Length: 492
Image 1 (tube, one colour):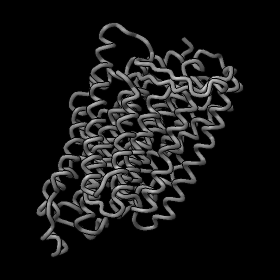
Image 2 (cartoon, one colour; image 1 turned 30 degrees about the horizontal axis):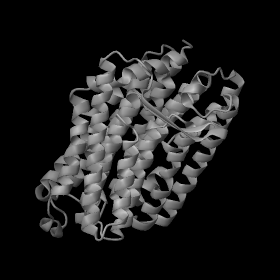
Image 3 (tube, one colour; image 1 turned 90 degrees about the vertical axis):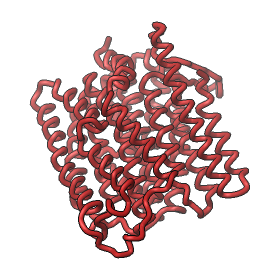
Image 4 (cartoon, one colour; image 1 turned 60 degrees about the vertical axis):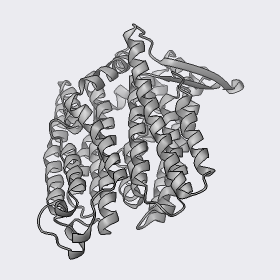
């Protein structure tokens, strides 16, 4: 498996889009390109499993190294483990769904799809990079497209939201860059993640560098209290932009918190674990209660994302193998679930021209497919067994409960309490939106989902069900990588 294909395919697709003659051609090229990316992701999964089945126990598979700046020891060093493969699959799923739900975009279609494809390119590069400088480079690729997507194609206070998002993410990037440079100078002038992992980094250095990296990546994944860009960014972004922001971009932060900060600086992780746990528990409860107060569907999903992502950070902070595995499953589950949620909200808004729950009602009568998908994603969000949300959150809670001290148990109980609050706001939103009488006579003429919207929803629902009904494949894929991280934390 040549990992460069994961970069070449979206790059060639993006260039083809720029050279396209009309909007229809742009859309079909983007769809074909994203379909090729999904096929590549499944081929990667298959070849990865085949390689593991032959007894290959290397930490990273399919490694490739191309010297870039030899004087600074910067190289294009790529490789994947189970975590990377899962994140690449998630990116491919959300990418093709985002392309499909944007089929009705008419304003600057070429530029819109180019930026979407650029976001996917940045995510693929980030997840396969083993050189921290290149990893940082791909992280930055994802910031500018977000700013432009919100600022040009967004709604509401889009300029304010775009500026806020860009400034906060760039602030996080600055912290990450300082942390990476700290590792570079301490680890013998190397940006290579695998080489740094072999270096003994003094404890006092870890106490300084770990918070820089964890907080920097934490900004991307809505670490409390640096989450304030999330509601505004999500609410103002176009539908596909919201799907990418919540489904992929927030996972870049979680991946960085685990792969870079926690794995490379285990002593720092253990020292700051209780702070991470406390902030995560606050985020989970705060996000849930804040969501109860929202009346706009996008704000409901945005604030609930703060709560759900808190489970990922809680799992990382607990530093047990089960909790870390749960954190990774939660990243995937939340990525699929929240992308689908924003897709459905976009479908509803395109037809009703409102996102206010109070102005809706009875949508099941006129849009049965859209309303049914709304039911499914809502039930996934509240943790219904059989869907991915249940598997992810239960794994985090079980792993968290394995810590015997009072503080960890209290944080686990607090996180579990949010499930009740989640059920309240999800069921209320579904009831007021899809059930009951139709409040607006104009809604009687609304049409159900088009073919492209149905296909996007089916793809994401398939991902949610594959985890919820048969989670063992995902657990087995993640387990070896989680063991390696835990062994490093334990000093083995």
